[in-house]
Length: 216
Image (cartoon, rainbow, N blue to C red; front, side):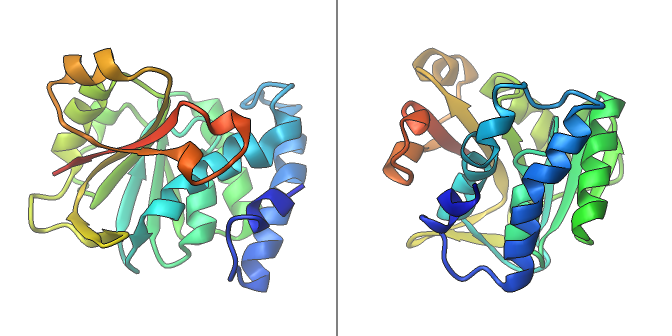
């Protein structure tokens, strides 16, 4: 099932390959206890959840030591796949629904992800922590995501740099979104950089799916 990942990414270590290959079994087991992924989607876990999350890794190369918070992680996406992909980057996965984080914590423990921490909290309640980047998948309108992100992002110039192709960025919000974003972007008053995921992955699922970045 994880062959779809190998169509687009090479260079996984044996340990990473083992971690990715374990995802389906551990999510299937936990999903029977606490439903974090729809029953019909669990069969396409690697396409609709894991590869979708890794579209961020296909664009951005995070430096070791970078600190990233995943807002509204739900079942652990995009945070868990990104934590496997970037073992030297620290990921803090948050959600306001505690039972979902129970699954996330169990998955991270099962995979031996020492670079993952979890917190049961609303974004606006995160205190005394600053991050280089915020990541999020289908949680809220862009305007709200940016409003929540600003207080927990490091000050401009203090965040770790990230490369995306020939460009270098220093901190910001990176989110996964789908559909016609014209009105949402207009209402946000922001000018995000937008990447089409269907330019990265050829499966039909990725049509009208995008990675957006708002720079700090």
